[in-house]
Length: 301
Image (cartoon, rainbow, N blue to C red; front, side, top):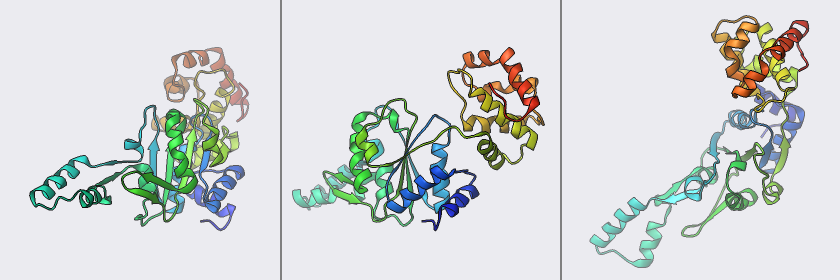
């Protein structure tokens, strides 16, 4: 736990994450109140990175569950080691120690339980704190959302054959969503909520300087301004902060000192991931953004 908001922001900053006041307040309250934090925003605005930076700042283990359509309990929560159970059953039979009640207790014990990310995060035997990231919950099925309600409300999971597993020290739980579909209100009610916007020019430039310190100052400002300009266009896939960072690193790798038409043409596929978007930006629009770059650091699209 952190003593103050400023300490929280400083610790995140030490791990190259720039958190504004609103986001820092939400994270601070999630820790203080032991409530899950639900993060929504466009892809690439730093939701997943916040979980990684928080784990580093807390000196905690980051446990990540990447959601997808068809995700089930055996991949997300637990499953039984059936092969080992069968071997144990054969041993009990061979030694004449097979008793239905005792065999059930033996076979459905912790020794045969394979713990997946959700169960790992609340394991009472944990010796280190944990940050549980349930990433892109909007990609999972609604039935899986329902299964999460017990975990989010009580930091516990009920396993029919085993019993209820409750966290001794609740993990910091973060859920992210890119809003590919609406997440059910029952899940949101169990969480604190934070919408993450695309960053301002100044914040994004600070992120680039922190994450790509080898980039020349002028190049960092130009890349940030260019991406800010792209976000004002009607694109199929608007670039996020992750694309800004990738572009800055790519230009550094090519030993570019400034952003000019040639550098943009060569590397536009780093920041835009659709042929239609690349075609839409080339030509007059590209010339217009570069002209604004020549006039100042914050071009209009």
